Length: 187
Image 1 (tube, helix red, strand yellow):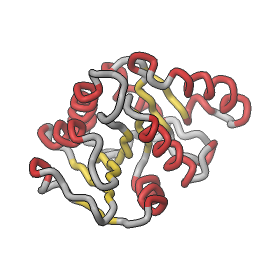
Image 2 (cartoon, helix red, strand yellow):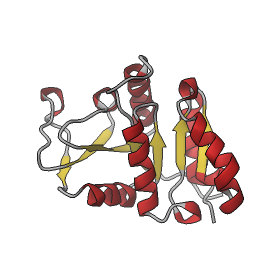
Image 3 (cartoon, helix red, strand yellow):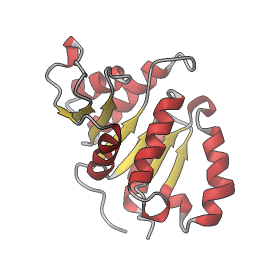
Image 4 (cartoon, one colour):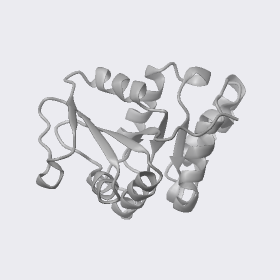
């Protein structure tokens, strides 16, 4: 089993906008703290505005390293002006850059847009067996339809699908799944 990268980079997809779980901000804060305390570098995407401010704030408070990949129109909120921003105008190029930087992709409960961005990012690297591992926090069944898709479709078409797409239902288990996914490559 390969060792866990000392400071893994995680592309995290989450949003606190739109209908859904009222706990999303708290979940993002907890996740940001957990990832930062384990030395992970967090990469997030922003188009015009940042939809995961609680994640970034919590990670920074916990001493974490965060990078925002944003379009040229993005203006950081006052509380985040010291967070590094890499500006890439093209949305597809931002997704590709997030994929290239990340050791794994992490999905937190959020919006359909954040789930779609995670999927498009995964696909930029080839998806399937060639893709980066994906860990999804299925809090309140946020990714239940994707869990079904993974069981019914991905598991039959991609070798070692369980090493590529991992689900957890609890915040307590989130880092364990991330570490496991990073230590068990799909090949």
